[in-house]
Image 1 (cartoon, one colour):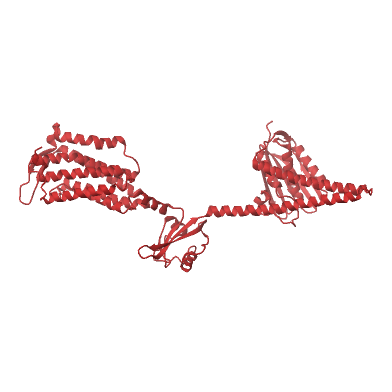
Image 2 (cartoon, one colour):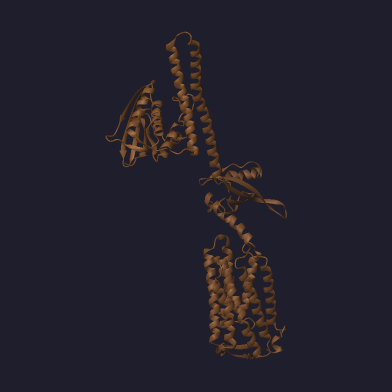
Length: 586
């Protein structure tokens, strides 16, 4: 290359345009450096570097004084052309798909293909099929050099257009699949990618030029300009800004922008879905909205001061958080940012806490009553016994002694129930399994309960199977289950009690059914029946005593035996409790 090939004709308008474009590309490069977290950042920078060197080549080509120099610069432009087009496509790929370009792909396009095109254009036998001729353009209205393009040239041009077209397809796919927060950016990126591809196609097919030059590099620069415009609008390129938009658009908490006049400016998707705002235009007021109207009216009256009530919508509960929207340059409020924090879980937890506190209060009331009554009887009996011990009234003494013993047993059962609850909650005790014949257990418990219940007339009929049924378990625990069910049946029945106990086989299970003709149980109170420290009537004037933990313990014992405890009841007619236990292996 002679010295004349390095001369620039700065009086040529085309050269000045290219110089200005080079300066613009350098500015874009510096601006891009502010956003290193952008997806595909390294490929965008490489594309701009390639575009810069690509633009240098047509500047010197336009300033060439000979066909040889023009040919040299035309061939020298090909490596940066390949690098620019490939890197731009990789940038589109990584931004659109959020995947990295495979090593083999970028190595072929960025490292190997530029070398191949240089060899093909200069030293290989194919060189004569790249540019067939280069000659000056004659005529006063034309300038520069005319190139005769051969088959190799068109082969590489087809390669470039294929890469550009692939980027265009990726951009289209990304625009169709992109979430709302980045969709407008991808649409602009699609337009930017279409510019150089359409310009190159027009150059090849219609011989379209800009001041006699290939328009593709200048259109690449224009695409870079679109990109820098998008970068200056930080919402589309800056990851922090995109992250903020994601928080707004994808938040599970409804967010609304409302004017001082109570009109809707904007709302995130969750707000539109929960409060059905899709049909509400921005010019319409929110004051008439069934859920939001009262809150918006309160904002207008109080200016955001004071407590905001919980809002319920869509099966969820929201606590309002209000922030004024102020114009910074005048300090004047023009609206409100309304964030509705989802407090459904918190409110449910608070409700459960209140229910637990209530249950605790009820338990304390119940347990106090259950402790006070037998203690009062025991204390009174002992005091009377001490007074008559020297009077020789043996009958009265024995009656008082029996009364004290009975109430002491009541206290003992209550304490044992409390200890049993503690064991179940801490899971500290392992079961000691024995083979238990349920026929003997059921009959024994029924006989004992009938003998001990002297205050009522009780008839307990026991129906046993022809063949005995056996289970693996704890005898004491299963006896407690049957006794608790029978005690409940007696407690919530009239003065005359008729109870049927049926033991039978149900497949691989043994089934115990206890049926009474008592008052029955209302619907929807199963949690109270089997709850801990709960009773259907927890007042001090209830018809039956008890701590309210017997059925809870019974269900826990049955569950520890891999069985189930349930009931069926009709108010005024009676109740049937059913215990199901797996049969022991023969």
